[in-house]
Structures are given as C-alpha cells and as structure tokens.
Length: 448
Image: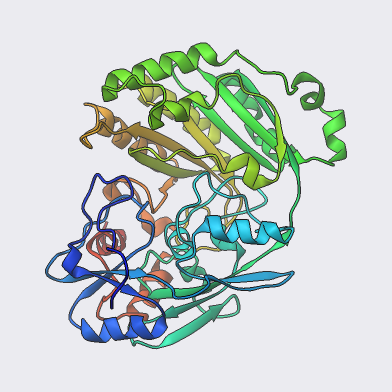
C-alpha cells in the first residue's frame, strides 16, 4: 500500500533502526490490512505505532513492518458514555477532542500522549491512582483484523477480552477502539517534599486519601517529592494538613538536589546545557508550586528525551520491602541514576498480562539518559539489571513497553498467563504476529 510521506523506520528518538524501508507498509483500513496479510502470507507482521516502546528489531528477510494510517477522521463517534476512535489515533487527539465536549476518559493521562491508542493498549500504558488500573481499563470494545484476514469485534462480555487489553501486538491488527468517557473535573494538585522515611510510612495512607498520587524519590539523598491530587471541590481539602501547609507560593527546598542531579547528568552525557531535553526533565521541579486544572493539565507534562526507560510493578503490600531493597542496590552501585525513582500506584486491572492484574501495584520507574551517539554510561545497565532482580524477588513484573531483562521475571505468576498463550495460539496458529521478542518472553514463561 502507498502513503504520501515516507514511513518512519527508526524509533522515536532516532537511535535505533527498526525496519528496512522496503519492508515497511501502510494500511488505511481493515481491507488494506487484509490485503497486506494476503500479499505477504509467508512473513511475520510487526505493528509499528508511534515507536515509543523499547526497540524491537524486525527481521529484514522474514518480517514486515505494518503502519496503520487511517484515511479520514480518527474520531469516529462520541456520545455521553463512549468515544470510538481508529486504533492509530494518538492519545493526545482523543483527550483533546473529548475535553472540547466537557468530557474525559475515566483514567489519568500518561505524561506523554503521542503514542497511538493501539500501542498504549498493547504495552500496558498507565498513569497513577488506586481508583483505576491501566488506560486499557477504560476500553469497552476493540475491533481487529485477525490472522484469518477477517475483522472481528471483542467486547467485555466476550472470551479473551482481558487479553486484548494488553495484547503485545500478537493477537491481530487493532483497527478501532471504543473507550468510556465521563464528565471532566477540575482538581487541585498539592506538591511537597518530604523525607524518605515519611514516604515509606505515609505512602499507602496518602493514596487512600487522594484520588491520584505520584512521587519522585532521590534515593541517595533520601528525599521525596510528592503530588497529591483531589477534586477541587472536595470538602476534605479544607480539613487536612495539605490545605494549610502547602500553597501556591514557590518552594525552593528541592533546588539544591536538582542542581546536583543536573550536574551529574551533564557529566554522564557530555551535555551540560540545561536547556537540553534531559536536563529540562529535572528542571521542571525547580521552584515548584501547587496547581489546579483537569488531569490532562496537571499530569501530561512529559519531555521526550533519548533514554533507557524501565518500570516494574510491585504489589503495593510490599512497598516497604521494595524501597529497602532499592536503597541497598542503588547504594552499592558505582553508577548514579540520572533521574529520581518514579512512583506511580495503580489499582486492579482487567488486563491479563499486566502486573496490576487483580492487584494494586506500585510502578517503580527508572531513567538512564543516552548520549548523543545512543550509548549509555558504564555501569548503568548493570544497575538496571540488579534493580530488576531485586524487585522480581518481591513479585514485581515489568512494564511491557519499556526496557527489561526477560530472564529475571516469572511471567507464569500471572494468573491468566497460560490462557493468554492458548488464546494467541488459537487466533494465530502460524505465529504471523508473534515477533521474536514476544515469542521469547511467552515461551520463556513456560520453560523457566
């Protein structure tokens, strides 16, 4: 199929080639997807959205890259309860469209929303809040083209719905998605910095009293920066310490730690320009203030920068153990992280392959920024491996779209893991959509 502009064949930050141009194809609708599957009947099919996931290389001889490029509007239908979009619609477009009508999705937006809806579902994109799971838990129906070339719809009443909520791109080519919507709400975000011990003691309680909580933990300094978010009209705001202890005046208590972090980051990457994207991600915390707005205005503030991004979801019940283990591992490493450890709790998810399936988790996030040539500092990957090993021992499982070492995790601990494998084999017995990395993970879970 043809497209008016060259198809991207490198990852979003241009550090890795994913596919050869001559093996990359665009499809505008379900019929064109079926045509491509028929025309390349002996090839594996790797789906490429916005290419934010950790790079998965495509075999130049046995695989093709498929880009969904819908013709016409990507917002197909909106009413007071649901919105239906094409699978290649960026999350940004979904949220902006429904906000224009006074609506929002019933989940927090992630910090970066340039990824497609299908890609966000395929990798387990999430934000924070014990009252919600993944972005996928807002889904009410998905339509996909299967290995048989036919278009199918799956709803919450159908067998395997939970598999499609985190599909890894190996069940078929999603073409349309229907998500729930609800009236938009304004919130207040109270921001404060506290000690690591107070983070350990109070984190669970903070998550019970506030709708959305996100924290950043500087392990070496044992200091934490916290955002607690509640509806602006909540009566509870007037009767808690948050109302009197924190105001809209700038707070500078975190600035010395931020300056040291930026200096260390500059030393490791060879770039001390504080206007560069990596330094700006740290610089956002300077002179912080409380804010108000809807969840998009408060949380969608990511700054894409070339990086190795890793995240592991650990049961909330083991939060204290995880913090202690991380402190020990990070203290023993000669490499120092470029960014604080990010803490994002979520509630129970319906997605079969998520670490949050049927349990509350804390997602621990880690960032190592890359140098201009795409390399990373010595010792950084060794530290990430040690971190994964420590969190895996506490029942942690990785975010599927980010960096992880598959050999460290027991994926069979997922209650629906075997059902996912059986459904995948039934829908795609030849493994048309089963790329090498996903195949390795699914089979590793069986043969560990």
